[in-house]
Image 1 (cartoon, helix red, strand yellow):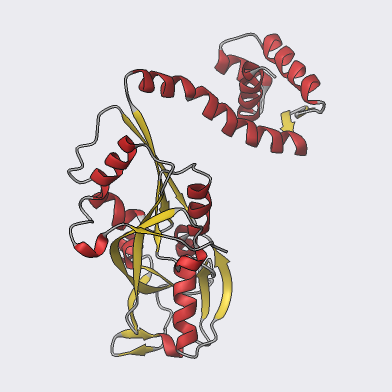
Image 2 (cartoon, rainbow, N blue to C red; image 1 turned 45 degrees about the horizontal axis):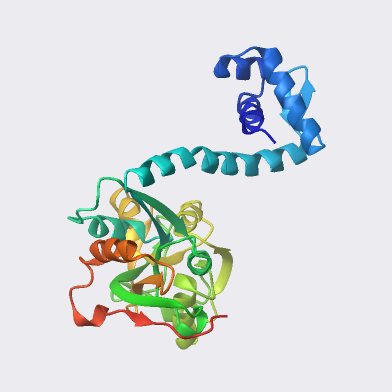
Length: 309
C-alpha cells in the first residue's frame, strides 16, 4: 500500500471531488484517479461512489479513511521525530484528565525551563483511558483525579499535586435546591444529572458522595469528558457537578450558573508514571515539570502495588 495513494484518497474525500483534489495537489486529475483506483484494487473495495454532484464515500471507505488519516499523520510526523532525535531532542507524552487543563497547564509550564528541542505531546482523555495508555507505555505521565489503588494497575507510581473544588453547574434560570447559598447535594434526588464516568474520576467521586448522603441520583446521561458535559448542560438537558477550574469561561460570560456545593467536595489530582518504562532523562524532565507542585513532603512518590480492575 502506497502512502501517496492514501494521501490522494484523503484529499478527494475532503474536497468531495477529483477535480478539486487534483487542483489542491497540483497534479492532473487523471493521476489522482489512477492512484485512487490502484488503492481500491489493493484494499479490495471501493472508497467512493461517483455521482453527478461529485463523489461520496462508501461506508467502508469512510471507516478506512478515518483510520488512514490517523496513521498517515503519524507516519508523516516520523521525519520530524527523526530530525529532533538527531539533534538530541526528546518527546514527552502527557495525558491530562478531562477538565484539568485550565487548573493544571499554567502552573505545569510556569518557569519550567524545558529544553528548546523538547516536543510535548499533550492528550486529554477520560481517566480510564489515561491509565490504559500508561500501562501500554504510550504515555510518559498521566495527570488525573485520584483513584483508589485497587483500581489502578500495578507498576505505576503516584504523586499528589493539588486539589480542585467541585461545583454545581446548571442552565441559567434553573433553580437547584439551595442551603445557605450552596447547592444542597442531599436534596438533588429529583434533579436530572449529567454524570462523568461512574467507576473512576469525577463520576466516581460524585456518585460516592451522593451515595454517602443517601441520595439516589436521577442520572440522565453519562459522559466521558467535561467539555461535553458543559455543552449538554447549556442545552438544558440537566445539571452536573464538575471541577470549578473547568468553568471559568462559563461563569465569566454567564453561559451557565456556577454554584458552590454543600457538603464541600474537593477532587485530589495526582500525577501517575510507570515505574520501569522511563529513561533517566525523562524522569528528570518530569521532575522539572512537577517541581511547582512538589514543594512539600506530602507530594512524595508512592509506588502502587494493586492489581487494578
